[in-house]
Length: 281
Image (cartoon, rainbow, N blue to C red; front, side, top):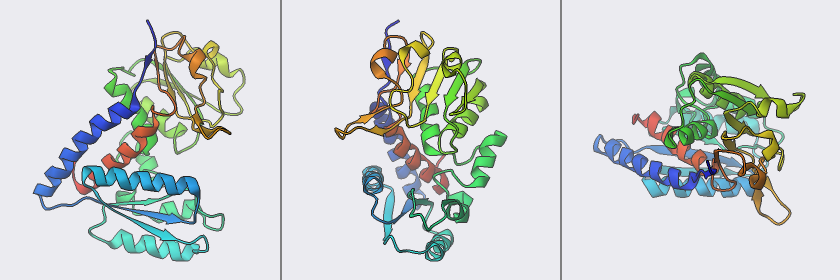
């Protein structure tokens, strides 16, 4: 069977059409979903990501605002802003753009966000719900990975899934989602010995490490569903994934490209989480 390249951009656009309908349904109930993004400092990548989120919100009708603060903004000042947003009845979602400046503890800021407004899904309460099998707000990239499986008609139940990477942002969270979907899950990481022995057993392979070309075709089980979550900036300015696309496409059954695979789903799931908080399931 020839490899199917999974068009995440196309799937994301289709889902955003559904979400736009959700905004209209909420509007009929007098609810305008609102997302507030906090950006501290001048990180160029963060500026781009925030701009993309603003545009995506605008396209489907979510009200959004970006609160921009200088690099010198203190942790206490940021906590005060979060506390104010927690109390704001018209703000449904709060997102603090990461990374934060070194003098601000990310974990403290994330824990300060009201769990019911944590559309990034990173608050310990939301992570705990996910690991307990009762997810409420789920980190956006892992949620996007599961949506890609769903939209391609792939059934994870009973499959062997291998996740390479153990961050809360992707690895551990996508492993929990796959486990909740009845897959048998193995998590690999930097200390895993003989990585290829694990990846070659995977019906579903999710790679989220941040190392260009880490996974080659010889490390993939024929016919596997391979999701490349890596985003590596090359000297040319182009993006490359953690999976060597050329060799992987000779073996895999399904393969997400970089860019245009998992990436477009991340912001789409942020929109979905915001609507969920506003009352649209």
